[in-house]
Image (tube, rainbow, N blue to C red; front, top):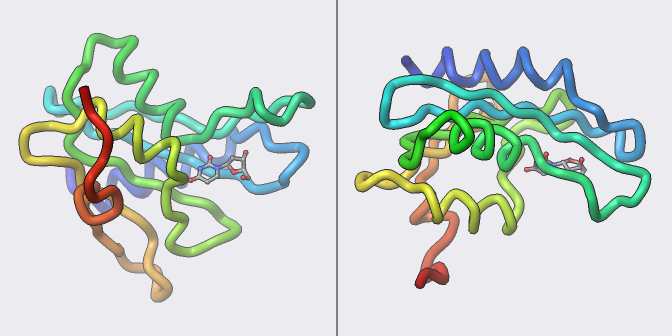
Length: 128
Ligand code: THU
């Protein structure tokens, strides 16, 4: 699975976003160590704190399917280039990072790929 393809899947699932309050759709696609991919989108709630982000939705989907190690996460919003993951999602990514870490794939300003690592976005993270 190449990263451009992963971003395309994130783009596709962002169309299913349930975001009537923020009107900020987001899609995410996880590449697990098994080679399988898992999609997720943000799902909002009238009680705003009950909202789940696209990234956590995709990661929980992967975990529910038996995955424990994630290699990459692509994130897309039609409203924002370089839609970086929130702090809560970064912490959840830390829980399931593969031995080689996690690549975070965003859409660059020019429409290409903007690739970061979780270690770069979440230095000195908490773990037990
Ligand atoms: N959101 C995500 O799904 N992922 C992000 O990385 C940033 C924020 C969602 C949460 C909420 O539904 C909307 O975007 C606005 O914050």
